[in-house]
Image 1: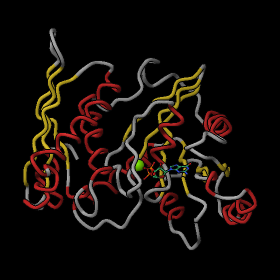
Image 2: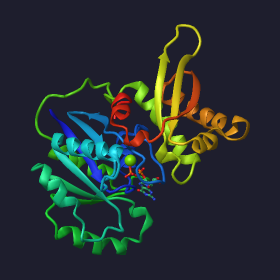
Image 3: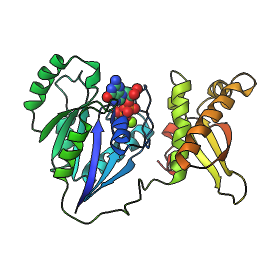
Length: 288
Ligand code: GDP
Ligand code: MG
């Protein structure tokens, strides 16, 4: 048997979370067109035959600015140190100089493979010069894929499986993650916020599950608080006559129900917590 941790790392928006979801065939990690959607390390377990691959999706690599981003970079570092194999994701617009590989090598001596994602967006001929650039770097493999269409993913899986160390499975075969259900519930709400709202609003938002009650009779009860930094943002989230929040709740609930496989009653609240992104104590309390 072979098993191990495989960390998926790279710049924001290159498609790391989409890649994780496609490899697992389950939507586990939220995705948006906006950078810096993923804030936590997310574990996705793929068990196939003799292989168990524990993928760690990570936030995009950035120069941290405020406390929340510092914590995000800390999670990326941990995920790289824990990895038996690092999957470095880039997109076809990759251009040197780029210090990502040096950063990875400063943290791990394990093999690094390079995945060029989003190849569905460029003509095949444009791929060769990119592969040439990567060939000049010290990586074990270069695999072009499209996380969206699935092209190249079987090849990628095979290569990842090959690089896994020998050893017993790390998780029961039926597990797909170790993040708790309430984590995913909060993430699905955050995903809708990234989709519905523009500019700084999604970034000024975090979601905390206050209550999660499984009930024998009737639907599960979930109470979630959406924290924002300013009163004006609260107004935007709630919308005229509460319409925006209602729509957000309805769509998030559908995603949550499809993930949990059971109906839920979602009770959403919006609260202002000034400068929460810089507030170490609060960030700790809410699990970052
Ligand atoms: P992350 O920030 O690296 O986790 O990137 P996401 O997975 O959130 O994806 C960012 C955006 O790129 C989303 O709009 C995705 O739908 C899109 N995307 C991801 N992979 C692909 C791909 O292979 N092809 C195309 N065309 N779009 C992709
Ligand atoms: Mg992501």
